[in-house]
Length: 472
Image 1 (cartoon, rainbow, N blue to C red):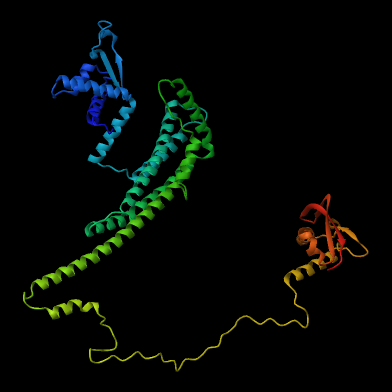
Image 2: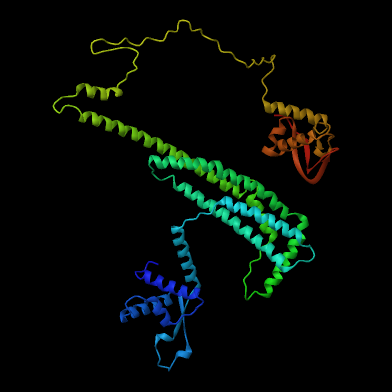
């Protein structure tokens, strides 16, 4: 609320909430006015301002009003004391949120994920004991309600685990952009080392224990009991649907979600890995920041020491030697060749390569022998030669005697023949059949489907008519 009257609005709503907590759902205007300005100046201006604040809250639908007809004295009665006010549910939720934020500032209490996972293990074991105790044919409503209550509690605990880990990751990342003193940086580094040692390892141990407990509840022999319990809960909820709002979880879907969350490579592992990555990022950032702080601290100590030395010198003296000592670390001290203002240093000598032996390059690839007068043959020409030989061997190469031959009439006995069949089709159809024409054959696609089979496999295609062609 950003209004200038925000504080009085909150005070009125808090007063209405106190009446509500004391089981006074609709206090009268006079009672609310007396409680609101108790101990304040009860003037006409104060009552007028209170009426204006109430009117604004009514316009925002944060408060509702009702006329108490028993207090009316006539149709001209306009006194406000006959009104009763009731705070809206949204306003109550807002005040509860403000109260929780206020209490969190006074007494911060972060949820430890390890405690939630330990509670999860206890709930799983208790649920497993109870579901195995009831019969698959009949069960009491109270027993079923207790089981489904624990199922809902496990789902809520899982949501709390995800939320707490997400908040923890955000809190870790907030340390990256901060600036710290040396003592604070050392403290954070120690805390991170302890965190990586205990927190994540404990989460991994608890996750390993949770997985088998969930699988016990998902056994096939328990499915009939879950279905019976779901039926009993649905029937009981239907009898009181106007009075009590009950959320009934689907056991199969809920347990599946739990198994996915706590399973291997599940969301819990991904959240833990994300937190580990964030912690390492903070650790690296703090170490780099700490080294920079220590470097600056040493530099400041050196500057402070030189200032103290300078303050101890004579006021009228010129500290030539002191200044030379201060600037001396900036010069090169480790020169191998001694030199002064009058004696020059020896020039650098060239590299002595007298005993260097030139090594010959060793080629480990053998030289390919030249062909005995035969012309060079490309790889594609070799493939066409193999294809032509295969077509002659299987009786599908057209010649002067057999001018036209169907591809399906060949003699095929092994699976490797299918590869050659596809090569014939590809060479005779694609590129206007120019590749197949190089070995003296042309291919035409027919409309008759055919099947070529061997002992173990078969190939179906539209039959190809092969005919002789002049070699180019």
